[in-house]
Image (cartoon, rainbow, N blue to C red; front, side, top):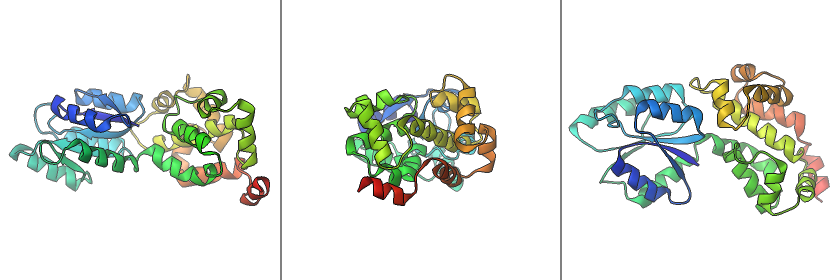
Length: 266
């Protein structure tokens, strides 16, 4: 999972220790850079310091909350008379997770916070939606698909899925058929559409932003996939479907009934 770290050097060092091999950090040295990073890279959690620019600020963080309401935000700052009022204001805006530097930011504590907030990320919510469909698959294949959902730009082909699961392509495809899933190619494409739909619920993302984040070479490919899997353009699915409705519609189109899955698996 990629974490935006819009914090000074001292906090960044602690975050790196906490992230270890589980999380990747994207450093932002300014609010403009933080905004650009969220729009262009697959950031799923933001750790920000109201003192990033040297003065305690609320406006930039409030803007991130308005533009990207689905992005979990954690405040990581130094407690001073200057920041106390800022933290109170941001808490009233619904940003309540605060880590105080040199007080409760031991790497183990930081790691716990990051892991907890990971559960609210867009990819984690998508994985929870698809958990029942993925459950019958072998563990190794399920892990690869979960990684593909976390980082859609990194795993885009059936060959990549099979190679990472250490099976041949035909075995991979047989497993999908066996548990009542569409072909791996259709599954990957449909999952990317669901992920795109989640991101497009945030007003800060354009269709072009989402296409870039999910590894589409062109935004028109995302549009084509949206029409193929949901029968809507990207703009239409943004306005007319909730995440649960998008999943239900896709399930009706591409997943076999549960009874059929049980017969195949037995």
